[in-house]
Image 1 (cartoon, helix red, strand yellow):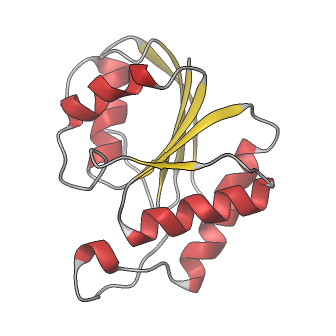
Image 2 (cartoon, rainbow, N blue to C red; image 1 turned 90 degrees about the horizontal axis):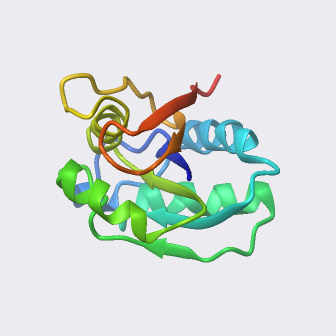
Length: 150
Protein backbone atom coordinates (compact mmCIF):
# COMPACT_ATOMS: atom_id res chain seq x y z
CA UNK A 1 0.00 0.00 0.00
CA UNK A 2 1.14 3.53 -0.72
CA UNK A 3 -0.09 6.13 1.72
CA UNK A 4 0.30 9.85 1.10
CA UNK A 5 -0.10 12.26 4.03
CA UNK A 6 -0.67 15.93 3.19
CA UNK A 7 -0.78 18.63 5.82
CA UNK A 8 -3.17 21.46 4.90
CA UNK A 9 -1.75 24.70 3.53
CA UNK A 10 -1.24 27.84 5.56
CA UNK A 11 -4.48 28.94 7.22
CA UNK A 12 -5.83 32.15 8.66
CA UNK A 13 -4.65 32.65 12.24
CA UNK A 14 -8.19 33.09 13.58
CA UNK A 15 -11.82 32.32 12.87
CA UNK A 16 -14.93 31.71 14.97
CA UNK A 17 -13.50 28.25 15.71
CA UNK A 18 -10.37 26.32 14.82
CA UNK A 19 -12.44 24.10 12.51
CA UNK A 20 -13.51 27.16 10.48
CA UNK A 21 -10.05 28.54 9.70
CA UNK A 22 -9.71 28.94 5.91
CA UNK A 23 -6.62 28.73 3.73
CA UNK A 24 -4.73 31.91 2.94
CA UNK A 25 -3.63 32.70 -0.63
CA UNK A 26 -0.13 31.58 0.33
CA UNK A 27 -1.63 28.33 1.65
CA UNK A 28 -3.40 27.74 -1.67
CA UNK A 29 -0.10 28.22 -3.53
CA UNK A 30 1.68 25.81 -1.18
CA UNK A 31 -0.95 23.15 -1.81
CA UNK A 32 -0.76 23.57 -5.60
CA UNK A 33 3.01 23.04 -5.40
CA UNK A 34 2.68 19.90 -3.25
CA UNK A 35 -0.13 18.50 -5.41
CA UNK A 36 2.25 18.33 -8.38
CA UNK A 37 4.10 15.48 -6.62
CA UNK A 38 0.88 13.44 -6.90
CA UNK A 39 0.52 13.91 -10.66
CA UNK A 40 0.11 10.55 -12.39
CA UNK A 41 -0.35 8.61 -9.15
CA UNK A 42 -3.25 6.12 -9.17
CA UNK A 43 -5.04 7.45 -6.10
CA UNK A 44 -7.96 5.29 -4.99
CA UNK A 45 -9.08 7.31 -1.95
CA UNK A 46 -8.86 10.90 -0.75
CA UNK A 47 -9.50 10.96 2.99
CA UNK A 48 -9.92 14.36 4.57
CA UNK A 49 -10.44 15.95 7.96
CA UNK A 50 -13.78 17.74 8.35
CA UNK A 51 -12.00 21.04 9.15
CA UNK A 52 -12.41 23.75 6.50
CA UNK A 53 -8.70 24.21 5.72
CA UNK A 54 -8.24 20.48 5.11
CA UNK A 55 -11.36 20.32 2.92
CA UNK A 56 -10.08 23.28 0.88
CA UNK A 57 -6.66 21.62 0.56
CA UNK A 58 -8.21 18.38 -0.74
CA UNK A 59 -10.35 20.30 -3.25
CA UNK A 60 -7.26 22.08 -4.59
CA UNK A 61 -5.49 18.73 -5.00
CA UNK A 62 -8.45 17.39 -6.98
CA UNK A 63 -8.53 20.53 -9.11
CA UNK A 64 -4.77 20.52 -9.85
CA UNK A 65 -4.81 16.82 -10.75
CA UNK A 66 -8.13 16.93 -12.62
CA UNK A 67 -9.54 14.12 -10.48
CA UNK A 68 -13.19 13.17 -10.17
CA UNK A 69 -12.42 10.98 -7.15
CA UNK A 70 -14.81 11.82 -4.29
CA UNK A 71 -13.57 13.19 -1.00
CA UNK A 72 -14.19 10.94 1.99
CA UNK A 73 -14.53 13.04 5.14
CA UNK A 74 -13.20 11.13 8.14
CA UNK A 75 -13.95 12.35 11.64
CA UNK A 76 -10.84 10.66 13.10
CA UNK A 77 -8.36 13.03 11.36
CA UNK A 78 -8.64 16.33 13.25
CA UNK A 79 -5.60 17.91 14.95
CA UNK A 80 -6.27 16.40 18.36
CA UNK A 81 -7.50 12.94 17.39
CA UNK A 82 -5.80 9.77 18.56
CA UNK A 83 -2.84 8.80 16.39
CA UNK A 84 -3.32 5.10 17.14
CA UNK A 85 -7.03 5.31 16.30
CA UNK A 86 -6.22 7.01 12.98
CA UNK A 87 -3.66 4.31 12.18
CA UNK A 88 -6.28 1.66 12.90
CA UNK A 89 -8.60 3.07 10.25
CA UNK A 90 -6.08 3.08 7.38
CA UNK A 91 -6.31 -0.59 6.42
CA UNK A 92 -9.93 0.02 5.46
CA UNK A 93 -8.74 2.02 2.43
CA UNK A 94 -6.68 -0.29 0.20
CA UNK A 95 -4.73 0.90 -2.80
CA UNK A 96 -3.05 4.28 -3.00
CA UNK A 97 -4.64 6.70 -0.55
CA UNK A 98 -4.17 10.36 0.30
CA UNK A 99 -4.96 11.58 3.82
CA UNK A 100 -5.32 15.37 4.14
CA UNK A 101 -5.13 16.45 7.75
CA UNK A 102 -3.23 18.46 10.38
CA UNK A 103 -0.35 18.51 12.78
CA UNK A 104 0.30 17.16 15.32
CA UNK A 105 -1.70 14.19 14.01
CA UNK A 106 0.18 13.72 10.72
CA UNK A 107 3.68 14.16 12.12
CA UNK A 108 2.92 11.69 14.90
CA UNK A 109 1.14 9.28 12.55
CA UNK A 110 4.16 9.27 10.22
CA UNK A 111 6.49 8.50 13.10
CA UNK A 112 4.23 5.74 14.42
CA UNK A 113 3.87 4.04 11.04
CA UNK A 114 7.61 4.24 10.30
CA UNK A 115 9.14 3.60 13.73
CA UNK A 116 6.36 1.83 15.61
CA UNK A 117 6.30 4.43 18.41
CA UNK A 118 5.47 8.08 18.98
CA UNK A 119 8.91 9.34 20.04
CA UNK A 120 10.07 10.45 16.55
CA UNK A 121 7.35 12.40 14.74
CA UNK A 122 8.19 13.81 11.31
CA UNK A 123 8.56 17.58 11.19
CA UNK A 124 5.94 18.81 8.75
CA UNK A 125 5.46 22.34 7.45
CA UNK A 126 2.16 23.54 6.01
CA UNK A 127 1.43 21.61 2.80
CA UNK A 128 4.21 19.06 3.46
CA UNK A 129 3.60 15.79 1.64
CA UNK A 130 4.78 12.43 2.99
CA UNK A 131 4.93 9.24 0.91
CA UNK A 132 4.88 5.96 2.83
CA UNK A 133 4.91 2.41 1.50
CA UNK A 134 4.14 -0.91 3.19
CA UNK A 135 1.49 -2.26 5.51
CA UNK A 136 -0.40 0.48 7.40
CA UNK A 137 0.65 -0.99 10.74
CA UNK A 138 2.89 0.73 13.30
CA UNK A 139 6.52 0.11 12.39
CA UNK A 140 5.81 -1.57 9.03
CA UNK A 141 5.78 1.39 6.65
CA UNK A 142 8.82 2.90 4.97
CA UNK A 143 9.42 6.57 4.27
CA UNK A 144 9.71 6.93 0.48
CA UNK A 145 9.63 10.71 0.26
CA UNK A 146 9.05 13.93 2.15
CA UNK A 147 8.27 17.04 0.11
CA UNK A 148 7.99 20.55 1.49
CA UNK A 149 6.45 23.26 -0.72
CA UNK A 150 8.80 25.92 -2.00
